[in-house]
Length: 122
Image (tube, rainbow, N blue to C red; front, side, top):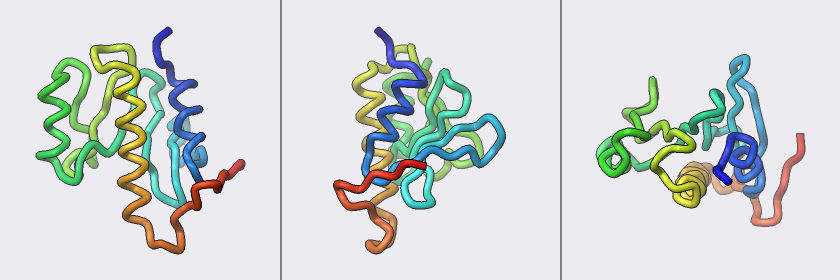
């Protein structure tokens, strides 16, 4: 069974302190504190932080040119769009989401980082 948008959202919300938001009508995102770590809006792809900069994020595009693209508007900061159901294996997509979450959490002030047991249900 292929990873779908519901399974991906469930994975995102299983992260400590993660919660679902809809900052723009119809565009679901996963946040930790007040920062987005995954854009899940369209349902057939996920936008995630794939590197500290564009050069690092481009490595994933080079590996999967048909299914990974620079994310609109924030791509210069290392964000990519990864198509679900394409050549990127599901387990790798989950690992990329985990890395995006970890990157965002690491940039939060220590006072706003979730504890490992923290779960938020809105």
